[in-house]
Image 1 (cartoon, rainbow, N blue to C red):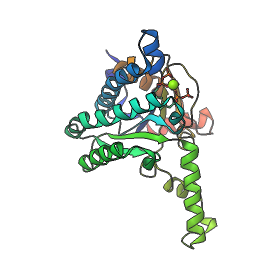
Image 2 (cartoon, helix red, strand yellow):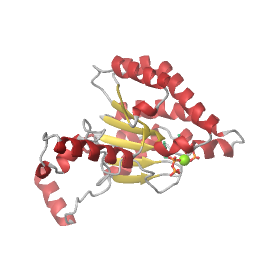
Image 3 (cartoon, helix red, strand yellow):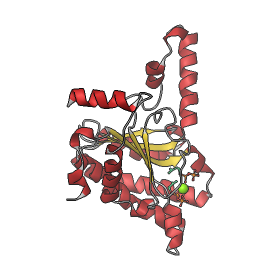
Image 4 (cartoon, protein in one colour):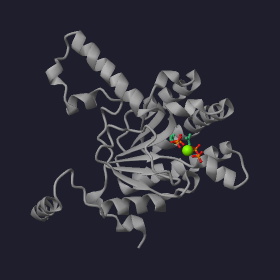
Length: 253
Ligand code: IPE
Ligand code: IPE
Ligand code: MG
């Protein structure tokens, strides 16, 4: 039985978030330049989007370019932006056929105009789809997002649209880029680094974290399903005791 068949469909995360890391190292190990790794990484994106759809995941967030990634050598940044434009152009119809709905989170205005145009077209094309929600984090950082949310809340309080005492966790969520999406239950990072790198700091509060040494260009459906199986074997306690969780599970069985 393969890992997909072993999955408990009742216990799937609704939302999986992935830090797609290791493209550069993977390419270097093969004597290639970093950009080659980014190109190969697109194959993994296609594979994992399909894998999530097949497993029945509803939301997939992919960290594709961070605010800090703007500080990379200009040639690499240019290559990544070009790859983004070409990939969206090539894949939009296929995504649409597969009923995928596209979204973007991040500081959209900082992306080159051509990227914004391609992304807007793909978002519009797939707007009515009802399958997997594919959320691309582009020019995204969580501290930026939280700071922006805080500014908007302060403006709304100053304008009298909001009272300070109304500010709570639910309201704060509504001011984040991810307002329309549930929090990820599972966050995967490839390529062996055990850090969050400014990704969804607020939303990952109770996410299960899964780290694998596999570099992103080699990450395949099987690896995704192994991560999902690992997730399903965990006990999520949300601050409670194990006994409380088990009693609740037994009551619902
Ligand atoms: C992830 O791979 C892709 C982006 C950050 C855009 P990296 O480019 O970070 O690859 P490594 O981590 O240097 O190997
Ligand atoms: C995080 O990876 C950002 C993306 C995958 C887009 P990085 O490779 O930029 O993270 P650090 O620098 O190793 O923390
Ligand atoms: Mg990296």
